[in-house]
Length: 203
Image 1: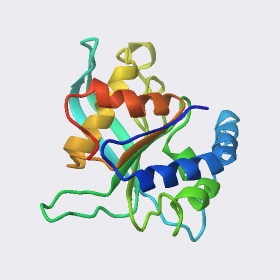
Image 2 (image 1 turned 180 degrees about the vertical axis):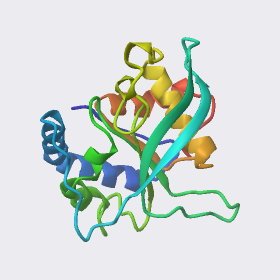
Image 3 (image 1 turned 60 degrees about the horizontal axis):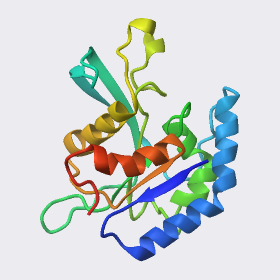
């Protein structure tokens, strides 16, 4: 499984802590992937930080191939609270991206929360505002199986990145991220997203 961390001019210590935590929790994500592959739902930790669930809706969304969807939904979850700097900008946001066939729930399993997001862990939800989107075609975001099936607009890798950027910058009003972390295709998005979008995501 590919695990990528992308940051720009961020803290080397943060990068080291995140990399260490991700390496230590490789088995956690493998377990979550196995659960997803067999149709199960990862268990949410009891007593752990609770994720907030939300939906972003985009009217008449135009995909890169020119097709449009009347109403496109991007479902996402968040852990922690945004912190605003002296300029009023959110400065503690981290984007977490899942792998193919998964969704935000797999990154919010009991094991992964304990390994990464609990108090004192590398991505402590008491310090960071963590964002977990369901990529288009996955989870509770718009997907062909919602009803359109073969009539659903053709979407690709770059469309996923476009929608992640739109969610972060327009819906959540975040212009800079502390880090973008992804696994497998999410890891590819994490680094390529910086090249595929015109704005600079990471501070």
